[in-house]
Length: 309
Image: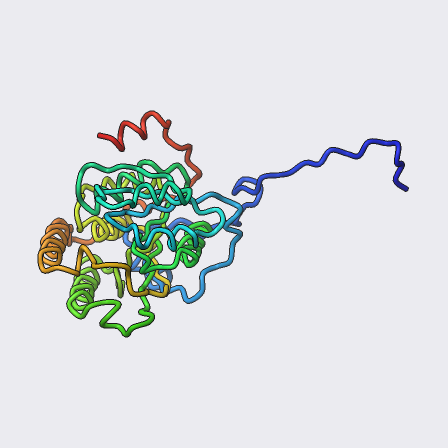
């Protein structure tokens, strides 16, 4: 029976982290560098429904490369799920993108070097979470779909998770122009032929572990960055998977497919990445990518120096 004269016991709380809420044992490490040559453990799989995990049990940084997205940012940032922290990598916006992002609680990283890859990489350097997501800031994706790509990485079901775009609203032509879809298919076919990764879409919504991404040593700072990430991950023996995510009409004109110049630059950048692929298969005895371990974030001073360099 409760004694009213006795002080109540102090209320304590336990922070939900991967340490005290383990996701369970992951798959055994592979013995092959390119696991797609093994029928019992393919490199690439299509995940129809992502495993359910408590996203609030961890903090995940979301890199949003941004160039004049003032119209889209309020909606995008207001729909960020719990546990997902937006980092807006502003690539020289001339509108109010940076101010709007800050007003909606996002961390803003100013990236003076122009280029989609430069913005993505600066955001990656500024991130501090174990798992990092990347997605466009133009409202073509709903942030509430981020767990679809983050959860398989959190449960060690995949090393790099891509969101395969499923068009929504205004018809496929209005959402995803024909020339962009054709280019995407050509690139996917090249990846299947040259590195054996049967991706159907180089989706810009994706997730992976931060330290592993940095270890890939990506060098493209323009439109070839997303393709180089998949290529280097495949060469390193990563398990690459995809899951369907809705793809909506974006706010404003695309910097990539909305102009002839943007399209030509994108093709040029991606051709350069494809030319760098080592087509010879890796030896069967090559070491596979080890299972990821939690990493300590880099010191804030080092991150600041890297981002502003």
